[in-house]
Length: 148
Image (cartoon, rainbow, N blue to C red; front, side, top):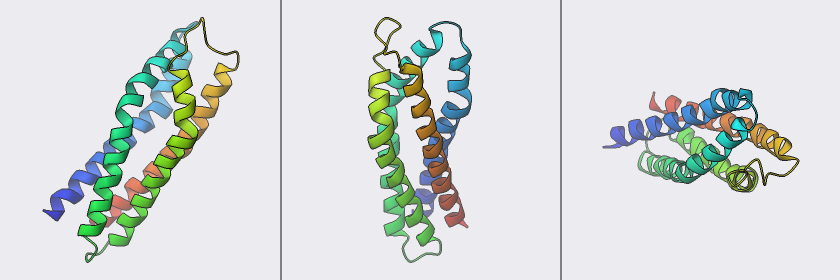
């Protein structure tokens, strides 16, 4: 049963990393290259859609990692799982303090009501997101290493 938990947790976190990586390095670049207001409208829609889904994915990944750490404490690699859980906590804290406030504003913007500094706010969100992606990759790497 523990092996199934380990694999399920690793796959869940790995998929989350893939989504967040693609947002950072593919989707946002595509949106930013669209003409006129299309990119801003796409970011607002993405903020609404992913903003509804990702909290469950982040918290679920953290809970799965914590359960793995407790259930597998006696096994090699347990320290790596604890480190991964700590990194996932960091990603949640970063999200709540840095990214969610910007996302909550951005998902309501239209070309008619967006603030003048909307691009600067999106650039700040992107920079924070790059750091969060690095933290998530580190957590995923720890989980994969703990499987060995």
